[in-house]
Length: 514
Image (cartoon, rainbow, N blue to C red; front, top):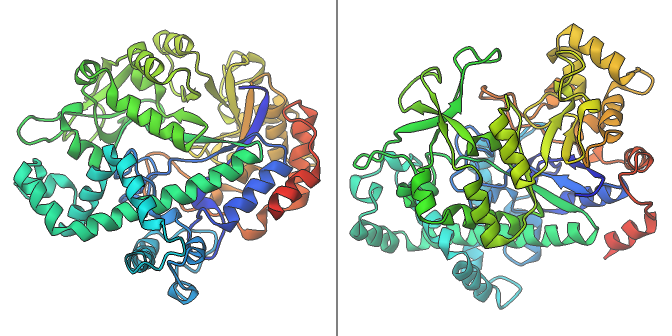
């Protein structure tokens, strides 16, 4: 990755009329904003369908896309909706806050209407049905299981597969055949939604790439217990052979931030099984992800070296134990199958020499978080004078407070004082811009900040507070956020620190007109 920079902006956080960000007009406008600002990368959070808790890191599938991001206006242009099908529906009254309960209730109704119109051959493109069939054939290796899973889930009041009738829970062949026949139309509905998701996303990504911008996607290391992945591939996970309950689940050990540790609850991979199958599930997952993104950030990279395995049923993470992961073998399998791939290793947390060696052996760039830099002395590895080139430098990520929130509420006063002294922060420049300057001026190959930091937003714009539930993943930008003057200011600091080439405004305008 050459010297450059980017902005974190989750699709859900884009502005718009219909309750949650989509692949529609606002996404294209944000792409133009990035171009004008001289940015090389648009980093997003995972695109998978969210489950209870609304976290994009807990999804019903490691391969499927979130139907919430499908844009109604594009469906209308394709002949599958009328304006009155969605324009007067209440998707939430607060334009800065996503009401996931309302989105779940209202958006899927409208998407169901689009599917019914598709069945009535109302699509403007007479080949649309053919394209759907081609998509189903190409993506069958994951789509068949996912669509069946979601259809059956509807039959069981959206409950996890662990609570389903025993025959279909265990995927007995006769039960699978029964549900496929009984729910054939519902299965086609979920397949149709994935077709529309992929179609709209690929069109947006093509536009972004034509602007010279690349997408950095995000992959959770683990998958949710309530997912088609585990239901369809139980041998790939450490599950009880008869009950299919997890034997161990993932998390983190106790530390100064969490006295009883972090209990994530995701089932652990059976790495012995993965090795026997040449890590084919992981190869498929990486290959599919890199068809959606240009660069892939893998969350909790340390888990490939060693992971904290907690007995299933424990209420805290205290009784877990460190267990060796697959190490370099899984990445060798990926490289052998796919060649050199663009991956970022999320190597945050307490790093061991073994984890650092694994990261270096892969050659993947690691991460630095600037707001982590001010709690110790000058040896802190997150201080810019300790950086090396092969790192992505962040003011903060979705798991961190905004710079303003950190300065005003989250950080101890002594940390704030150190930051002011080290970065020479002033109110005249703006503390947020001082942090951005600190990241952009560093030696790290790529510098990235949250959009909230460019907007100088406070704690209320924080996307996620780890180990909490209820108010995360809800922030949205306002329609007027992406102003020309802001793009110009971002461009100036980016160009000053050698992170972009000089751009001509007419290049962006010409592309936008097309």
